Length: 297
Ligand code: URA
Image (spheres, helix red, strand yellow):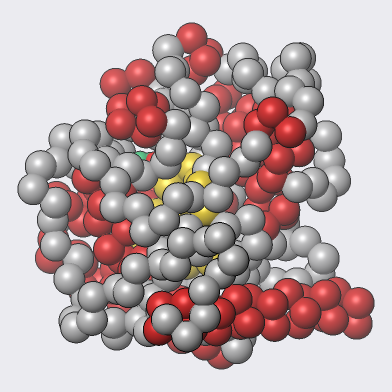
């Protein structure tokens, strides 16, 4: 790691800490963002990762899972990517290498027809959240609700994911959430290799743009794609793995854990998932990165 990369990341982490402090002041009413909404104060107490009432999630194993119907819990409007602010690509060329901004990546994705999923999708579900967060979550693929709304994790699994994120002291708006594919596979089947081959480069580009310090990989498909392995989630979760494509010489750790849709089907596994998330919180603290809200740990 060279000194320039170190300095850049130190500056970035300081900016994040400052932002966290400003958010805390906004919560306490001691500071108000000019023209901005202050985040809601998270409820305190033990983490309650309880089930939303209805679940139509598919998949039956910890290594599968999608969300379906349900309403999102949004703390504040997610950061919008102004799609009309950048030219939209008209061809389906593979993504060009090099670090780009999220709007540039979105523009390059265009009205994507690179794989067959475009024939059945309603929306391209690009991703949501903060473009410079230290904490990112990656799931498998949009489900029905996500396809309808154009936003990842807005069904029952998404509601549980929101609770998990909030228990850690973060919110949908202060982390970044994306999937290994941006279009819904028909009937929530797993994404196929040709679809992943077209779509993963865009996720890697998003990761390079955001440069998070930790990615929580939700379930086996996301973990396998990010770590280039075929190992089951039980063998991967509970420990940090290195993301091989770390940019700027700065390490990026991946924490695989159970997919929230699996946790809805097997709530006994929530304890293990929470212990994974506590490792993430401890590592962020070790890096000097404070969450915007007090965690419920
Ligand atoms: N499951 C996922 O993996 N991603 C979503 O966006 C929704 C459900």
